[in-house]
Length: 283
Image (cartoon, rainbow, N blue to C red; front, side):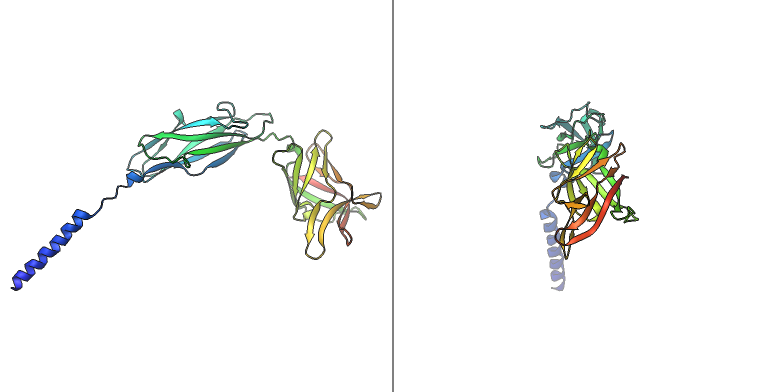
């Protein structure tokens, strides 16, 4: 009887193992493999720069995958293949090696000396040697080629600002304030000035390149004090404050900027400082 029970237990255990083997599902990862870009938007400088755009293969089935792609000029100010950029991959194909999982489309820009604004083009994945899935959302990227011949380039960039006191003409700050001037998107005459007077604010100005002037509008807030509120750049003309006048600055051939006389003033309260001029030296 004991022998019969022992045999029965062994048979039941074997049956259980056999059931597990029969019903255990097989997971084929390659059924879920796909090809995709890792991002949707990229930018590259116009001046003979190179951009590497990653293409990924996920859950592949153990083989190198050749991925093909096409390019298309943007609808507005589109970049032209062969004129604005070139593709370094042969035959518009990128190889994603097994075990690596990622390959790159190499874009090389072609520089020029003409201001033709930013240009765009798109790259779309069109197929692959393993016939993996590519979703519409992850199958296209837009590339922007940034123009480096901006008409205001002479005053764009990083500056060091030193302010000279109105009373005696000596420098108020021994360490220059770090100021950044950047173009306003879509404008060929407007710029933003960040951290003028070291105040931490961003103001806007108009640039006249032929006459080499940069004009800061009246009422521009350059600092906000926790107690006294808005501090503005106020023009000093003939020893008096002119609250309606713009602060007109000049710049030289190297882009160095010199202001007229002005005060950092909280209207109705007083000055944080008054200056004969400030000099912003391009870095």
